[in-house]
Image (cartoon, rainbow, N blue to C red; front, side, top):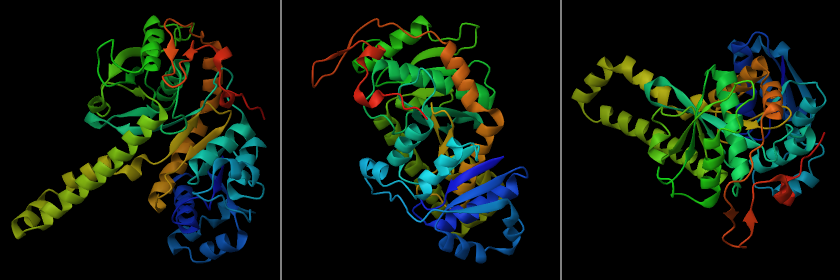
Length: 377
Protein backbone atom coordinates (compact mmCIF):
# COMPACT_ATOMS: atom_id res chain seq x y z
CA UNK A 1 0.00 0.00 0.00
CA UNK A 2 1.32 3.44 -0.93
CA UNK A 3 -0.03 6.74 0.38
CA UNK A 4 0.90 10.11 -1.12
CA UNK A 5 1.56 12.92 1.37
CA UNK A 6 1.29 16.66 0.79
CA UNK A 7 4.17 17.51 3.11
CA UNK A 8 3.83 21.29 2.95
CA UNK A 9 0.17 21.95 3.76
CA UNK A 10 0.13 22.07 7.57
CA UNK A 11 0.48 25.09 9.83
CA UNK A 12 3.55 23.54 11.52
CA UNK A 13 5.48 23.02 8.29
CA UNK A 14 7.11 19.83 7.04
CA UNK A 15 8.45 18.79 10.47
CA UNK A 16 5.05 17.52 11.63
CA UNK A 17 4.19 15.81 8.35
CA UNK A 18 7.58 14.14 7.93
CA UNK A 19 7.84 12.74 11.47
CA UNK A 20 4.12 11.93 11.49
CA UNK A 21 4.60 9.94 8.29
CA UNK A 22 7.49 8.01 9.81
CA UNK A 23 5.37 7.23 12.86
CA UNK A 24 2.64 5.92 10.55
CA UNK A 25 5.24 3.70 8.84
CA UNK A 26 6.14 2.33 12.27
CA UNK A 27 2.45 1.58 12.92
CA UNK A 28 1.72 -0.11 9.55
CA UNK A 29 4.22 -2.66 8.27
CA UNK A 30 2.65 -2.85 4.79
CA UNK A 31 2.73 0.91 4.22
CA UNK A 32 4.92 2.96 1.89
CA UNK A 33 4.96 6.77 1.83
CA UNK A 34 5.39 8.98 -1.23
CA UNK A 35 6.11 12.48 0.07
CA UNK A 36 5.60 15.57 -2.08
CA UNK A 37 7.34 18.88 -1.39
CA UNK A 38 10.56 20.83 -1.96
CA UNK A 39 13.28 18.19 -1.91
CA UNK A 40 15.82 20.27 0.01
CA UNK A 41 13.36 21.06 2.81
CA UNK A 42 12.25 17.43 3.12
CA UNK A 43 15.77 16.05 3.08
CA UNK A 44 16.74 18.49 5.83
CA UNK A 45 13.94 17.14 8.01
CA UNK A 46 14.91 13.55 7.26
CA UNK A 47 18.50 14.26 8.25
CA UNK A 48 17.41 15.15 11.78
CA UNK A 49 15.09 12.20 12.36
CA UNK A 50 14.96 10.66 15.84
CA UNK A 51 16.95 7.41 15.96
CA UNK A 52 13.87 5.35 16.74
CA UNK A 53 12.35 6.36 13.37
CA UNK A 54 15.40 6.29 11.11
CA UNK A 55 14.94 2.61 10.34
CA UNK A 56 11.69 3.31 8.49
CA UNK A 57 13.31 5.76 6.07
CA UNK A 58 13.68 3.03 3.42
CA UNK A 59 9.89 2.91 2.94
CA UNK A 60 9.63 6.63 2.20
CA UNK A 61 10.33 8.18 -1.20
CA UNK A 62 10.49 11.86 -2.08
CA UNK A 63 8.83 13.57 -5.02
CA UNK A 64 10.11 17.07 -5.69
CA UNK A 65 7.34 19.70 -5.75
CA UNK A 66 8.75 23.23 -5.49
CA UNK A 67 5.48 25.13 -5.05
CA UNK A 68 3.20 25.36 -2.00
CA UNK A 69 -0.51 26.20 -1.88
CA UNK A 70 -0.88 28.34 1.22
CA UNK A 71 -3.78 28.21 3.65
CA UNK A 72 -4.69 31.78 2.72
CA UNK A 73 -4.75 31.25 -1.05
CA UNK A 74 -8.13 31.65 -2.73
CA UNK A 75 -9.48 28.50 -4.35
CA UNK A 76 -9.61 30.08 -7.81
CA UNK A 77 -5.95 31.09 -7.55
CA UNK A 78 -4.98 27.65 -6.25
CA UNK A 79 -6.66 26.01 -9.24
CA UNK A 80 -4.73 28.22 -11.66
CA UNK A 81 -1.39 27.97 -9.86
CA UNK A 82 -1.47 24.33 -8.76
CA UNK A 83 1.09 22.98 -11.23
CA UNK A 84 4.25 22.01 -9.43
CA UNK A 85 2.64 22.17 -5.99
CA UNK A 86 2.93 19.50 -3.33
CA UNK A 87 -0.86 19.26 -3.04
CA UNK A 88 -1.51 18.65 -6.72
CA UNK A 89 1.42 16.23 -6.90
CA UNK A 90 -0.03 14.08 -4.13
CA UNK A 91 -3.52 14.10 -5.67
CA UNK A 92 -2.13 13.31 -9.11
CA UNK A 93 -0.38 10.24 -7.72
CA UNK A 94 -3.80 8.87 -6.72
CA UNK A 95 -5.25 9.84 -10.10
CA UNK A 96 -2.45 8.04 -11.96
CA UNK A 97 -2.61 4.91 -9.80
CA UNK A 98 0.82 5.44 -8.25
CA UNK A 99 -0.70 5.86 -4.77
CA UNK A 100 -3.75 4.37 -3.11
CA UNK A 101 -4.67 7.50 -1.16
CA UNK A 102 -3.61 11.07 -0.44
CA UNK A 103 -3.31 12.84 2.92
CA UNK A 104 -2.99 16.62 3.20
CA UNK A 105 -3.17 19.17 6.00
CA UNK A 106 -3.44 21.99 3.48
CA UNK A 107 -6.02 24.49 2.30
CA UNK A 108 -9.37 22.64 2.55
CA UNK A 109 -11.10 24.47 -0.29
CA UNK A 110 -8.18 23.96 -2.64
CA UNK A 111 -7.87 20.30 -1.67
CA UNK A 112 -11.55 19.64 -2.41
CA UNK A 113 -11.55 21.60 -5.67
CA UNK A 114 -8.37 20.00 -7.01
CA UNK A 115 -9.51 16.53 -5.93
CA UNK A 116 -12.83 16.96 -7.75
CA UNK A 117 -11.03 18.15 -10.87
CA UNK A 118 -8.39 15.45 -10.89
CA UNK A 119 -10.33 12.43 -9.59
CA UNK A 120 -13.96 13.15 -10.42
CA UNK A 121 -16.85 12.05 -8.24
CA UNK A 122 -18.77 8.84 -7.73
CA UNK A 123 -21.66 8.51 -10.17
CA UNK A 124 -24.81 10.06 -8.75
CA UNK A 125 -23.02 12.39 -6.30
CA UNK A 126 -23.09 16.07 -7.23
CA UNK A 127 -21.21 17.34 -4.21
CA UNK A 128 -18.62 15.44 -2.15
CA UNK A 129 -18.74 16.01 1.60
CA UNK A 130 -16.16 16.15 4.37
CA UNK A 131 -16.76 13.65 7.17
CA UNK A 132 -15.00 12.67 10.35
CA UNK A 133 -15.75 10.54 13.41
CA UNK A 134 -16.52 12.21 16.73
CA UNK A 135 -16.58 10.45 20.12
CA UNK A 136 -19.89 9.53 21.73
CA UNK A 137 -21.04 8.25 25.10
CA UNK A 138 -20.23 4.64 25.89
CA UNK A 139 -16.91 4.76 24.06
CA UNK A 140 -18.45 4.79 20.58
CA UNK A 141 -18.31 7.28 17.74
CA UNK A 142 -20.51 8.74 15.04
CA UNK A 143 -19.78 10.29 11.66
CA UNK A 144 -20.59 13.96 11.22
CA UNK A 145 -20.97 15.41 7.72
CA UNK A 146 -20.65 17.83 6.01
CA UNK A 147 -17.84 19.69 7.77
CA UNK A 148 -17.29 22.63 5.45
CA UNK A 149 -17.24 21.58 1.81
CA UNK A 150 -20.84 22.75 1.17
CA UNK A 151 -22.10 25.80 3.02
CA UNK A 152 -25.36 26.09 1.11
CA UNK A 153 -27.10 22.78 0.34
CA UNK A 154 -30.32 21.52 -1.15
CA UNK A 155 -32.37 18.62 0.14
CA UNK A 156 -30.93 16.16 -2.35
CA UNK A 157 -27.40 16.95 -1.14
CA UNK A 158 -28.38 16.14 2.44
CA UNK A 159 -29.87 12.86 1.24
CA UNK A 160 -26.61 12.07 -0.57
CA UNK A 161 -24.66 12.86 2.61
CA UNK A 162 -26.89 10.47 4.57
CA UNK A 163 -26.29 7.68 2.07
CA UNK A 164 -22.52 8.21 2.00
CA UNK A 165 -22.26 8.47 5.79
CA UNK A 166 -24.21 5.24 6.23
CA UNK A 167 -21.91 3.42 3.82
CA UNK A 168 -18.89 4.77 5.69
CA UNK A 169 -20.21 3.56 9.05
CA UNK A 170 -21.08 0.14 7.66
CA UNK A 171 -17.83 -0.44 5.74
CA UNK A 172 -15.29 1.18 8.06
CA UNK A 173 -16.85 0.49 11.46
CA UNK A 174 -18.83 -2.66 10.59
CA UNK A 175 -22.15 -1.18 11.77
CA UNK A 176 -24.74 -3.54 10.32
CA UNK A 177 -27.59 -0.99 10.10
CA UNK A 178 -26.33 2.53 10.76
CA UNK A 179 -28.69 4.94 12.50
CA UNK A 180 -28.84 8.18 10.51
CA UNK A 181 -30.16 11.52 11.81
CA UNK A 182 -30.61 15.01 10.40
CA UNK A 183 -29.26 17.75 12.63
CA UNK A 184 -31.98 20.29 13.37
CA UNK A 185 -33.02 22.97 15.86
CA UNK A 186 -35.81 20.76 17.20
CA UNK A 187 -37.39 17.35 16.75
CA UNK A 188 -40.82 18.62 15.74
CA UNK A 189 -41.86 18.09 12.11
CA UNK A 190 -42.27 21.81 11.42
CA UNK A 191 -38.84 22.79 12.68
CA UNK A 192 -35.88 23.65 10.46
CA UNK A 193 -35.18 25.24 7.09
CA UNK A 194 -37.04 23.95 4.00
CA UNK A 195 -34.11 21.90 2.69
CA UNK A 196 -33.84 19.98 5.99
CA UNK A 197 -37.60 19.33 6.13
CA UNK A 198 -37.61 18.12 2.53
CA UNK A 199 -34.66 15.81 3.16
CA UNK A 200 -36.51 14.47 6.19
CA UNK A 201 -39.47 13.62 3.95
CA UNK A 202 -37.24 11.79 1.46
CA UNK A 203 -35.52 9.80 4.17
CA UNK A 204 -38.77 8.86 5.89
CA UNK A 205 -40.02 7.43 2.61
CA UNK A 206 -37.00 5.12 2.63
CA UNK A 207 -36.46 5.50 -1.10
CA UNK A 208 -32.71 5.80 -0.81
CA UNK A 209 -32.11 2.35 0.68
CA UNK A 210 -30.24 -0.20 -1.39
CA UNK A 211 -32.64 -2.32 -3.41
CA UNK A 212 -31.05 -5.52 -2.11
CA UNK A 213 -31.78 -4.53 1.46
CA UNK A 214 -28.51 -2.82 2.41
CA UNK A 215 -29.54 0.47 3.87
CA UNK A 216 -29.78 2.33 7.11
CA UNK A 217 -32.27 3.26 9.79
CA UNK A 218 -33.39 6.87 9.57
CA UNK A 219 -34.20 8.03 13.10
CA UNK A 220 -35.35 11.56 12.26
CA UNK A 221 -34.14 14.87 13.64
CA UNK A 222 -31.41 15.20 16.25
CA UNK A 223 -30.63 18.37 18.18
CA UNK A 224 -27.10 19.57 18.81
CA UNK A 225 -26.88 18.08 22.30
CA UNK A 226 -27.58 14.64 20.83
CA UNK A 227 -24.57 14.50 18.50
CA UNK A 228 -22.34 13.05 21.22
CA UNK A 229 -25.03 10.99 22.94
CA UNK A 230 -24.54 7.82 20.90
CA UNK A 231 -28.13 7.95 19.60
CA UNK A 232 -26.94 8.05 15.97
CA UNK A 233 -24.09 6.54 13.95
CA UNK A 234 -24.31 9.26 11.29
CA UNK A 235 -25.37 12.90 11.76
CA UNK A 236 -26.05 14.96 8.63
CA UNK A 237 -25.98 18.75 8.27
CA UNK A 238 -24.71 21.45 5.93
CA UNK A 239 -21.04 22.40 5.93
CA UNK A 240 -21.44 25.67 7.83
CA UNK A 241 -23.21 24.03 10.77
CA UNK A 242 -20.97 20.95 10.74
CA UNK A 243 -17.75 22.94 10.76
CA UNK A 244 -18.99 25.14 13.61
CA UNK A 245 -19.95 22.08 15.68
CA UNK A 246 -16.63 20.35 15.03
CA UNK A 247 -14.49 23.38 15.92
CA UNK A 248 -16.60 24.17 19.00
CA UNK A 249 -16.38 20.57 20.24
CA UNK A 250 -12.60 20.49 19.71
CA UNK A 251 -12.24 23.73 21.64
CA UNK A 252 -14.50 22.48 24.44
CA UNK A 253 -12.61 19.18 24.76
CA UNK A 254 -9.28 21.00 24.92
CA UNK A 255 -10.61 23.44 27.52
CA UNK A 256 -12.06 20.66 29.70
CA UNK A 257 -8.82 18.70 29.68
CA UNK A 258 -6.86 21.83 30.52
CA UNK A 259 -9.23 22.78 33.35
CA UNK A 260 -9.10 19.25 34.73
CA UNK A 261 -5.32 19.35 34.82
CA UNK A 262 -5.32 22.80 36.47
CA UNK A 263 -7.78 21.62 39.10
CA UNK A 264 -5.70 18.59 40.08
CA UNK A 265 -2.51 20.64 40.25
CA UNK A 266 -3.99 23.45 42.38
CA UNK A 267 -3.39 21.94 45.84
CA UNK A 268 -1.37 19.22 47.50
CA UNK A 269 -4.45 17.14 48.28
CA UNK A 270 -5.71 17.28 44.71
CA UNK A 271 -2.25 16.31 43.44
CA UNK A 272 -2.44 13.21 45.64
CA UNK A 273 -5.89 12.42 44.23
CA UNK A 274 -4.55 12.92 40.70
CA UNK A 275 -1.78 10.41 41.32
CA UNK A 276 -4.30 7.84 42.53
CA UNK A 277 -6.67 8.49 39.63
CA UNK A 278 -3.98 8.71 36.96
CA UNK A 279 -4.98 5.56 34.98
CA UNK A 280 -8.61 6.72 34.76
CA UNK A 281 -7.55 10.25 33.81
CA UNK A 282 -5.32 8.95 31.04
CA UNK A 283 -8.20 6.91 29.65
CA UNK A 284 -10.41 10.00 29.72
CA UNK A 285 -7.78 12.08 27.96
CA UNK A 286 -7.37 9.48 25.24
CA UNK A 287 -11.11 9.41 24.62
CA UNK A 288 -11.55 13.19 24.52
CA UNK A 289 -8.30 14.21 22.85
CA UNK A 290 -9.24 15.74 19.42
CA UNK A 291 -5.90 14.54 18.03
CA UNK A 292 -7.13 10.95 18.20
CA UNK A 293 -9.94 11.75 15.76
CA UNK A 294 -7.83 13.70 13.28
CA UNK A 295 -8.41 12.80 9.65
CA UNK A 296 -11.52 13.84 7.72
CA UNK A 297 -12.59 11.89 4.63
CA UNK A 298 -13.58 13.64 1.40
CA UNK A 299 -16.52 11.34 0.66
CA UNK A 300 -17.94 11.03 -2.82
CA UNK A 301 -14.69 11.28 -4.77
CA UNK A 302 -13.47 8.53 -7.06
CA UNK A 303 -10.43 8.09 -4.86
CA UNK A 304 -9.35 8.33 -1.23
CA UNK A 305 -8.42 11.80 0.02
CA UNK A 306 -8.03 12.45 3.76
CA UNK A 307 -7.83 15.97 5.17
CA UNK A 308 -5.74 16.41 8.29
CA UNK A 309 -6.34 19.35 10.59
CA UNK A 310 -4.07 22.21 9.53
CA UNK A 311 -2.72 22.55 13.04
CA UNK A 312 -2.17 18.82 13.60
CA UNK A 313 1.02 17.84 15.37
CA UNK A 314 3.12 14.75 14.67
CA UNK A 315 0.75 12.40 16.46
CA UNK A 316 -2.33 13.93 14.83
CA UNK A 317 -0.90 13.62 11.33
CA UNK A 318 -0.03 9.97 11.96
CA UNK A 319 -3.68 9.38 12.93
CA UNK A 320 -4.81 10.96 9.66
CA UNK A 321 -2.58 8.58 7.71
CA UNK A 322 -4.01 5.66 9.69
CA UNK A 323 -7.46 6.82 8.65
CA UNK A 324 -6.41 6.63 5.01
CA UNK A 325 -4.88 3.17 5.57
CA UNK A 326 -8.19 1.92 6.94
CA UNK A 327 -10.12 3.27 3.96
CA UNK A 328 -7.68 1.67 1.52
CA UNK A 329 -7.88 -1.66 3.36
CA UNK A 330 -11.68 -1.60 3.10
CA UNK A 331 -11.71 -0.26 -0.49
CA UNK A 332 -14.20 2.44 0.47
CA UNK A 333 -14.57 4.09 -2.99
CA UNK A 334 -15.67 0.78 -4.55
CA UNK A 335 -18.39 0.38 -1.92
CA UNK A 336 -19.56 3.95 -2.51
CA UNK A 337 -19.61 3.53 -6.29
CA UNK A 338 -21.48 0.22 -6.19
CA UNK A 339 -24.10 1.13 -3.60
CA UNK A 340 -24.76 4.68 -4.72
CA UNK A 341 -25.14 3.70 -8.37
CA UNK A 342 -27.74 1.08 -7.37
CA UNK A 343 -29.71 3.34 -5.05
CA UNK A 344 -33.02 4.87 -6.06
CA UNK A 345 -32.92 8.62 -6.55
CA UNK A 346 -35.53 10.48 -4.48
CA UNK A 347 -38.34 12.40 -6.11
CA UNK A 348 -39.42 15.73 -4.60
CA UNK A 349 -42.20 15.83 -2.04
CA UNK A 350 -42.16 19.48 -0.99
CA UNK A 351 -40.38 22.48 -2.42
CA UNK A 352 -37.31 24.09 -0.91
CA UNK A 353 -37.32 27.82 -1.57
CA UNK A 354 -34.24 29.99 -1.55
CA UNK A 355 -35.20 32.85 0.79
CA UNK A 356 -32.99 35.31 -1.13
CA UNK A 357 -34.00 34.58 -4.70
CA UNK A 358 -37.40 33.04 -4.10
CA UNK A 359 -36.35 30.23 -6.44
CA UNK A 360 -37.85 26.82 -5.75
CA UNK A 361 -35.52 23.83 -5.57
CA UNK A 362 -37.21 20.58 -6.51
CA UNK A 363 -34.16 18.55 -5.55
CA UNK A 364 -33.81 17.20 -9.08
CA UNK A 365 -30.62 17.13 -11.08
CA UNK A 366 -32.06 19.65 -13.56
CA UNK A 367 -31.93 22.25 -10.78
CA UNK A 368 -28.20 21.81 -10.25
CA UNK A 369 -26.23 24.99 -9.79
CA UNK A 370 -23.07 25.57 -11.86
CA UNK A 371 -20.87 24.30 -9.03
CA UNK A 372 -22.69 20.98 -9.13
CA UNK A 373 -20.92 19.96 -12.33
CA UNK A 374 -19.61 16.40 -12.39
CA UNK A 375 -15.85 16.68 -12.98
CA UNK A 376 -14.29 13.76 -14.76
CA UNK A 377 -10.76 12.47 -14.70
